[in-house]
Image (cartoon, rainbow, N blue to C red; front, side, top):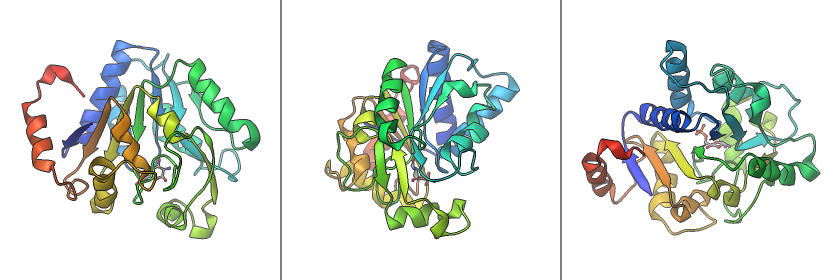
Length: 256
Ligand code: GLP
């Protein structure tokens, strides 16, 4: 796992995504919602509008997760959020953006796994981390080998996400989420975290034991996982001096 402590995670993440799309115009991107990836998405959109980004016309996208119970087209569905914040602005056709389908809960998980497989798998998966260590909507206790399925949110996650709704009561209780096993099948994992509120979860994920109690600790199993942190999110790490040394000595040509 590569841990990078930086004040410019958005630039690094945008560079990595652009480099992938330049290498492979038909790349498959895994997209997270939440606030953590937003600066990176805004940077991609800024570059695209400035005409310096690659063409995204052939890219395919798969969302990590989706709420269950919101009407289709509700502005807080993760699908609408990602269309609004990123993919429409990059000129990615809406047909090329897939998300778990809450209108067909019985079959949604299997169908989503099949769709990802049929697309050739995810090349780069953008991730955030919940304050309790959740990854996508895999709450503590999730099977480390899980696939896309319905999950029940914890009270804490519903409270954390209430800022996007009128009240906690308005936050759905159920979600569809890629499993931890699904996420591990992506070829590159890129996790972004910022702020003190994430420090404990980041420390548990990066330096704690591999455990379903901290779902994000599955990153330790992945052969190519990158964790981009600001100073506050990195403040609970014991080996931060070592991570900084590795990063400062890293040759530019290696990329992330
Ligand atoms: C939500 C999402 C996760 C996200 C997490 C952190 O629960 N399902 O994918 O990583 O929240 O969100 P934020 O980045 O807003 O802190």
